[in-house]
Amino acid sequence: MTKLVSIVMGSDSDLEVMQECADVLKDFGVSYEMQVMSAHRTPDLVAKFSANAAQEGKKVIIAGAGAAAHLAGAIAANTTLPVIGIPLAATALNGMDALLATVQMPAGVPVATVAVGKSGAKNAGLLAVQILALSDAKLVEKLAKYKSAMAKSCQEKNQRLQEKIRK
Image (cartoon, rainbow, N blue to C red; front, side):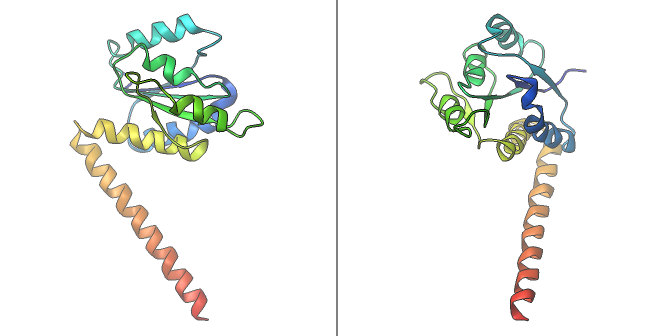
């Protein structure tokens, strides 16, 4: 079975954060694969993967990396697929270095960049689902239900707060 989304991380130490992304895709029933490859330690592998991803049936690539965080950009340079970058907090700079490296791409090499860390990984998964939903009505329906459930949860939390402050 062709995996629609490829989740790539620079190190296996990134798995705890990147699992958030995988969990979202799984919840929406989107097929995915996960791999470890490094823009700096395995540049030839990254280039080959990127160049072949579309031919292999991938529709979106999500790349998470910390520190210099060139992985998403290195992938985007070698593919026409949408690439979502997740900056990871892997150094004493708490992800600021990764954020800047991921978001500051030159014109012509776009990388959609989400927040640093777990919330970014979750949003990367959701953004991939939204991209896929452009041609999948079932995903549109699932996204609508997801957003409705979020709104309901927020309203319930507000109701509990209002009850608490009235006492």
